[in-house]
Length: 137
Image (cartoon, rainbow, N blue to C red; front, side, top):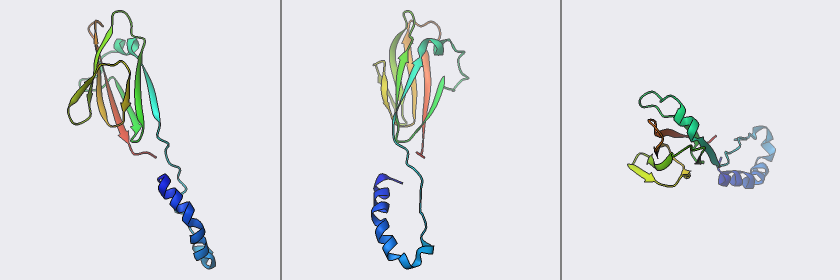
């Protein structure tokens, strides 16, 4: 239930009760569900450890994350060893690929395929992340 609908339900409850006071056995509760508070989720990526993992199966991401469709996810890469330097993020959100050159990526709000590309990190030099969204509960 959205905050607006909840307010409307609370505001109209006295009117509903007055109008049905002689039929109180018919009074029902429509919903007692709580709404999801939209948040910004912070994910620290331990780059050194992830780059040492065995590569995933072809077409599979290194990491998979599912967020509520109103949440925002922020990726904070940490523990980048040696000469390894972030080259860029490639971001695919269903309408073409864009790139982003800053280390911290903090504005993912929709289903996205992300790739972090690195320079001078040895044979395995990218991290693929799949972010999916689901309805808020």
